[in-house]
Amino acid sequence: MNYSIALIPGDGIGPEVVEPATEVLDAVGDKFGHVFNYVELEAGGKAIDSTGEPLPAETLEAAKQCDAVLLGAVGGPKWETLPGHLRPEAALLGLRSGLGVFANLRPAALLPQLKAACPLKDEVLMASHPEGKATFDLLIVRELTGGLYFGKKGRVDSSDTAARAAFDTEYYSWAEIERVLRAGYAAASVRRKKLCVVDKANVLESSRFWREVAAVVSKDYPDIETSYMYADNCSMQLIRAPGQFDVIVTSNVFGDILSDEASVLTGSIGMLPSASLGSPTDSLAKNDRPMGMYEPIHGSAPDIAGQDIANPLATILSTAMLLRYSFGLEKEARAIEAAVNAVLDNGLRTKDIANRSNTNHSNTAEKIVGTKAMGEAVLKALEQ
Image 1 (cartoon, rainbow, N blue to C red):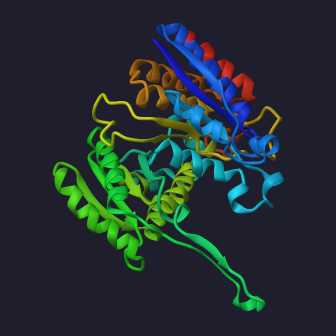
Image 2 (image 1 turned 45 degrees about the vertical axis):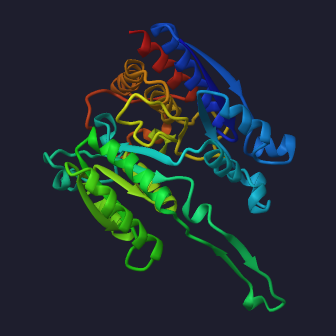
Image 3 (image 1 turned 180 degrees about the vertical axis):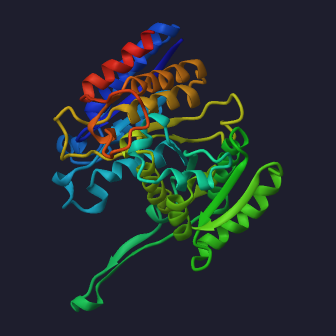
């Protein structure tokens, strides 16, 4: 089977982590009889340097013609002084909106090999886990194409400095909220059947509207336990009792913040993949395959770019999500995840996930390796 994948390496460490990820994809293709054809495209800072805009029209159009998109990272201090619509991050918003990928799935699970890298004590983890285990496994479903990041924004200029102002508007339609909720329920239906809607309904009208929509949509999923939590409380609960959560569904801005917080609990933001999916909304429960954009949730990390120390595992795990959700290749996705686990079992670590405490939860000695070596180790594990 032949598949086309749009590759957007981007800026900073983006190209460094995308390269081993594509090598892993090719190895999977060889092993299972698939051919992955790549179309490399420019977006972000690199596109600004070559075309003057963060998301050239030809990039978006070419991405739409592919079966899926794999993105590295965009941004960096070089472009921070540009106006908002010309900054590299505008490419992300443009891709999400242009591709129609509205449900961002960000899994956060504590792997047993990385328990020493988790900042929480075992007793904290055990207290909230349904089986009393010192671990957690949650999924944040973030609405991706609406809310504060896409609402009306602007500035109020004045000769009086004190009167100058800026504003961003939180705007959500019923349809936008309903479709991401249904994506969350589809995910919860194949997990532990618990879904928590996170908002700020005590102060925000848009959040109260989220709860109105959720009250209606939840009736279609009577076998799933639905709960509600304020975003500030959720940020605290992630630290004191992460095991209580299964699926969290929330708005664009809250999802952005909470998923980064959750990533720290796994040991490193360099371990977390993500999938941004479009219609059909029930694609997680059926065989229909949506457009998907896949990327690690870490940024471009320009301070470590070019040093061969970036962790490629989040990007490699993003390719597993790509195979699962956009191509329906479950065996192939699991092969990648198993290879990553095998590498961690063997004690290989990039610097960000190395044991920084005096506690050793494994009898395996750790060996710190670079980006390329970690990618090569995953390739070798795939061959086993």
